[in-house]
Length: 490
Ligand code: NAD
Image (cartoon, rainbow, N blue to C red; front, top):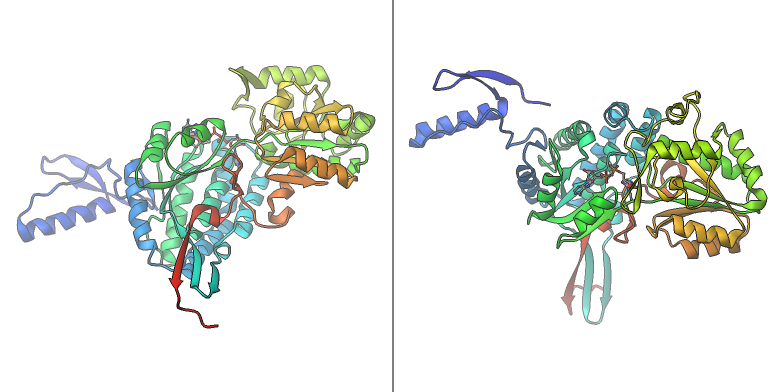
């Protein structure tokens, strides 16, 4: 909750607005002055050095507050961590509609119903303290035990594509690991992200936790990100975003967990259940208008079943574009910058009917995807385009398909999928693609666990730094204690 402001008249007779926090400081200082005659410094009305439920004007203040919170948080035990993260899970469910509406309003990307589902997945399936089981060894030399210890304050960068789910999932996972967190959110979602931080601190303190376990800067910029990267108090960086932020974070001499870009290819072979493939790909790639890094971005289909697959895609309610329309949309939406094709911000995560309007085609808002044939070198294939427009490429055979998938994936080693009834082909595909997430005969979203898959769920899939789908152990240090010649009871 924002502080209530009251009107105050200073020594020069000027009217100034001050908050409850500032009033408290003034009262404390006046009392001190009466006691020992020291001078009084009234904080400027614009200053927010004590933060507003974790939201600070200044990145340095946000970091100091998270460091002070870490010192207090260390006094709590693992059951307390579970209690605090459970309260964040409950709050996420309570606020899922509001957070989702705010995300669409502020970022103009995706669909509210799908964003609600993402919040539910985070609340129910983000990994927690259960991942921190200690391990022990007991033998003639004594007892050794390894535990997962926090790093301290983690500096986090969150993306525009899932601003609140990523932030909430990072909070649950990293607080479970005993850390506190500073965020430099994406500027486009800064108001939503500040609101999320405030709600988190409110529910955690209500549950008996310390203030400022999570903090952020109200006006995130590249400079505030850089300050966070360099700050000596920040022990570990956790960044989620495109190649630029991954590169920027990795320049620093500190450990980084980097959840970078993906460009997931799908291969459909002649043995596949084509109706299933079309249904699964449609559900997964159209989810939140394809802004998930893990969602299918291009499809390769073996020539002998290509036409049949295209018909199945139409049966799913998708709209087929002819080749010249795919080119036309690419000319509008994609731009070659240096060696890389980049998608224009105004096209990312828009509904399929909004994209089709730019071609003069009127469609219903319910149409999940646009799709059309292109070649393998087409910008729609090469770019991580994050739109509900999917290129479909004809390949000669399975081997040709694997080769083209590897190329389209750019060695991000993030996510890929294959539809085949031949398990030796599926095996060959998994060996060639080497991705952190690989799905056989299902939509790629199923690979991230949660309600449509198995295992835990995370919006932070750290391919560049090798953690894959992250959980609390990834945000901890392993520490071993050895008690020599003692403490054994067998
Ligand atoms: P983005 O790269 O534009 O921004 C991500 C964050 O990085 C933002 O907070 C932004 O302010 C910051 N940033 C960007 N350049 C920076 C720099 N040079 N220095 C410091 N900070 C910088 O990405 P986005 O559009 O918000 O998100 C989409 C991208 O994120 C896609 O590439 C997607 O694949 C990726 N992503 C990956 C995962 C994953 O789990 N691997 C999850 C979500 C998103």
